[in-house]
Amino acid sequence: MLVIGIVLSVFGLGLFCWLLFTLAIYALPFLAGLTAGLAAFHGGAGVTAALGIGVLAGGATLALGQIAFATTRTPLIRAIIGLLYAAPATVAGYQVSFALAGIGMSTGGWQMAFAVVGAVLSGGTAFSRMTLFVPPSDGQGSGRTHPPVS
Image (cartoon, rainbow, N blue to C red; front, top):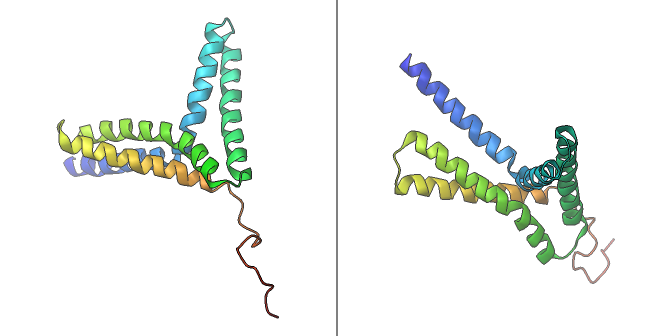
């Protein structure tokens, strides 16, 4: 039974890590949707209306961010948009990594080190997933000044 428990714990931790990296890009839209939904609920809207407002706000945040990232050509603006999406994912990655590291070790420096590594990886994953929305280059603007030789 002990072996089964250890194996299932490893698979469970792997599942949580996979889930963290898969959902890292959705941290900012989730935060925006949660904030809008709670504001609507506290403003007097019902539960259903607040839920709908939250889903719409989260979806709009994700869609607008992807469109803005894909259509802008300036690397500085792309970096700013990517960092806006990576910052909440970094915080969420730190919290999840800190909690998961607390399962396997006592509180201390190693737990903090694992949490920082998890935060960096989670933020990097969110930033790299934002770059997936950029269409591939058509080859124009590659810096060539002369026509190709035929």
